[in-house]
Image (tube, rainbow, N blue to C red; front, top):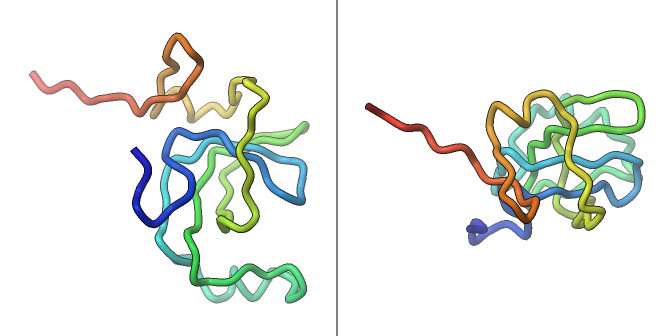
Length: 109
């Protein structure tokens, strides 16, 4: 279920609009919630607005896996159907038979 404020949902695979990386969303902030230092480090000509959802991704590019924090304006759906190879994905998600990522449920005894 998508949050009311966000275009993308937890478990959705997305890719960056400008840079060659993709990832799976594991958390969403309704607006910018990182440090001012982080935001100021982005070149002004490409710096995103703060008044939009920002997504935490288990991200990957051709060389490595990492965690990314990306504004909604810079994300597009990834329709490749390829699995995400980031090692932390297995800790939080499971894939259904159709290839969608679902948050693992915690079972209490």
